[in-house]
Length: 160
Image 1 (tube, one colour):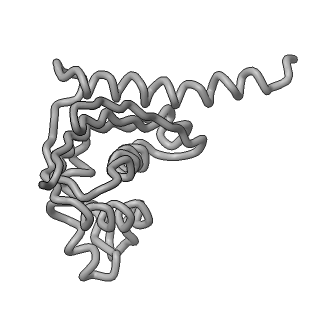
Image 2 (cartoon, rainbow, N blue to C red):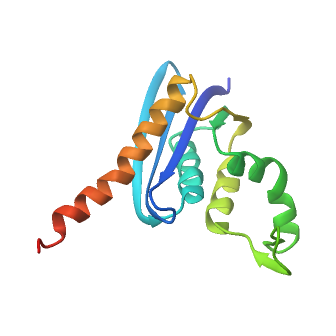
């Protein structure tokens, strides 16, 4: 029997680009796992993608997964845009800009697509900063991770 999992994710970035954090809450086989991480120089969109990637990596066998994200960028990227990006050689037209442009975060989109191929995923958008306990938890964890970089930098910088 294929197992079912619920994965809620969020990413954060301070001074986008800047220090960032990602987090997920994974509900699987009656257990709840929270995990978060950080990157020193990143963007909010990269952290949103990283949160889903790390959450899916937490699953050790193929599962039916509901991915719950407050990022339209992630949800639409996987449900609507990725096929076109691939067929166009990972370039696209950007609103308000002439010509073709490389798709940002291609490395993460490719990894997310690889992981998606291991599972049966349903993508669900949830309103951020609303009354969803797992989304709130992810938001707090991701922001705390981003702030740890700033705090560490302040400790390391010499006082004048």
